[in-house]
Image (cartoon, rainbow, N blue to C red; front, side, top):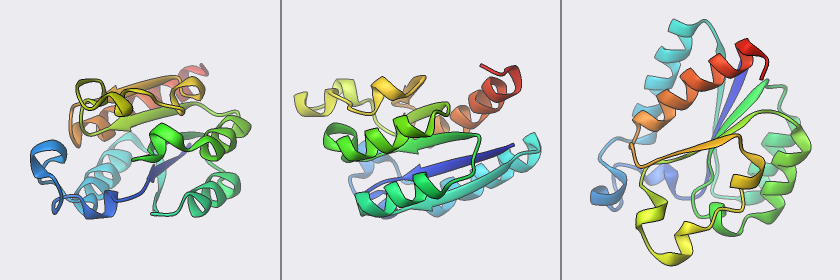
Length: 144
């Protein structure tokens, strides 16, 4: 079982930007937690981050994963070509956000990714990623 974890624009700056909103944990620390969790679960993960929608789409399209966990960053709200690429994969997708996007500015409350995801985890900081990994393993194991 292989799971692709994608982080979109500006998430490489975690731990340095808007700490009250996004927390103090860096992307490297989140990735380390995911690697440890994947090892404990006995699954392979591929970690990818880019500030470019095109690079993210290329990663999605070339992936041989069984499921995708994605924090699309600001692409959440307008990344229609990313949404199309994810939909074309025909895989389970879990959307993750560090902050609660529904408790923020009005424009952040709309996700163009949500219609192609089986669910969202929002507002739990880095814990959303490890929870998504647990859920994805369960979903793939159950063949949902």
